[in-house]
Amino acid sequence: MSADLAPRKSVAARQIAASCALVALGALLTSVQLDGNGEWVGTGYASLGVGLVTALLTLVFAPRGQLDLPRDPLTALSAVSHLLGLAFLVAGVLAPGGAWMFFEVLLLIALLARSGERGAGPSRGAFLALAAMLLLRLWITYQGSQHRWQLMSVDVPVLSSLPFEFLAPLQSISLGAFTPHELGFPPAGLEFAPTVAVWSLGFALLVLGLAWRARAASEHENDRVHEAIWELQPNVARLVERVLPESEWRELGLHALSERALRKRIEALVVERIAARRDFERAVRAANLLATTNTGGYGGEIQQALLERNQE
Amino acid sequence: MTIADQRTDGIQVSTAIAAVLIFVGAIAVRGVSGVGPIAPSDRERAPDELRAPMQFLGPGAQLRASELTPRVREVLRSEWSAVQPVVATLTGCPPTAEWLSTPAGQRFERLAAELRRGSREEALAALHLCFELARRSEWHPGLLARTQHADKLAGLLQEWLRAWGERSADDTLLSEPAVAATIAYGALMRRVSQPLPLGGSDEALARAQSFLRGLLLDSQGQATRLSIAIRARHPAALERFDAKRGQLEGFAEAFENSWPELDGECGE
Image (cartoon, rainbow over all chains, first blue to last red; front, top):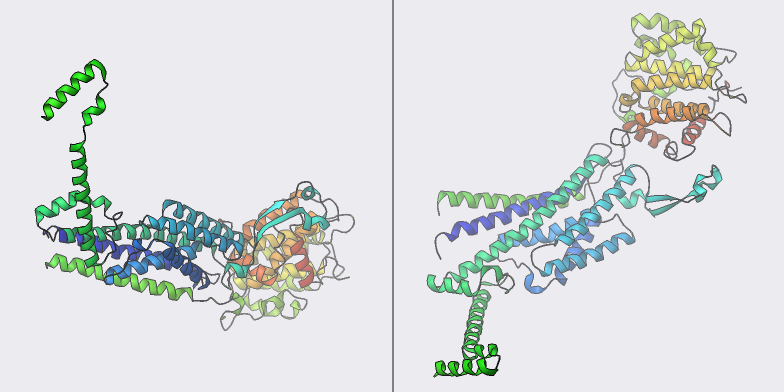
């Protein structure tokens, strides 16, 4: 291995550690809320449990080859951070309870599992869905902070304009009613503004941390593949890297393999690609490509005669 | 391995350990449950602080009025000692606005204004005077919809709330009296804005709503401490405050339930 590779690996490893710390900080911020007594209290384990199940199902439905298998303490931390980060992220955006929450869970499992197929962490679509769910949660929390225990109230035309008290129950329709208990508000009530600021910051840190971790983990895996290739003679290693370009390593399934499996996979891919290239060159050489441009007739006959002369 | 590499590895390990510790903290903190709201009146008080301040606003307020005398500034003490018994022994149920325009009433107003500018105990004394006046003068609009008396009394409470409403919400002495003053103000303004079952004064309602919004909501539209205290003491009072009609009904109902003797007709 060339000497200039060591610092590169260290940078990727350091980035994994830093991104995991960022994910953890985001998790901490989404786990607290400021209550009416001015004290920081927790947001409870129920939503975290649902988030953890969602994260696990996401991993179960993701293709096996794309999972980050831990091989050392750092990659173990990376894998755990990925799982916990997803769990805290989902827990932080879920609607407080009821049918909506389960609909959201199903949607998130589908989106996160699909984005996991690409192996680069949650996709932009998944993040957008998570952000939309966070906004819904913040809106519900705002409504609760105003002691309006519903998603919205729609006035009934005509009836709502009549000035009769006895019509009050019929003048508007409540959509998405909920209770303070469902919202998980602390007993002393919720300080809306600081809590929402902390949750939003936590969400942003989790999203950034997870995206950064995915990039750093990919870089870390690329470093491993690079290291394995550069165990060969430098000239051979350069040739192998031309046959197997770095941009294709993840798609070729070189990430998340054990040391032995990685080397066997590289070997198989090199043999396969060189054989394919040789077959292609042979086929090109054997093929009479100029014949495809022959239009026949007077000019075509002359062209064919010259071609056969050259081949002799 | 060079020193720089060792330092890099050290940073990496420290960051990883920090991440683990923060994760553990994030999981642990989720289980921290809060306690119920702690009312200011339940907090520890100074040894010499007046106990049960709501008694100074209740039917037997005159029995404890003398306790306020030593807590009034010396320059106001003689005036207090002269005016307080006059209000406490007011007879004949005079209309509020008319009595306030008499020499005794003017003296009362001047004293109430001076007390509002003073200490917490003096603020309580000022509120005591307002409630005594509400108890012994006539401010019910009646069939002729004479709202000026209730409006005048509400004006006195509004001035008190403007001076003390926000800062008294966390005060061990004044938190409950401030809640009472707000409920009384809302109930009085409900009388002013709708003295009869049909019709009413939109201007008075808008004035009351504007003042109460400033008192009960902060700059971000969130409930103030006073609003939270009101909701804790009188949950129904604010239920309809944001409705299209009957915004002050909750205040009126809470006021009638808590102070049935304050009916605007001296309990007659």
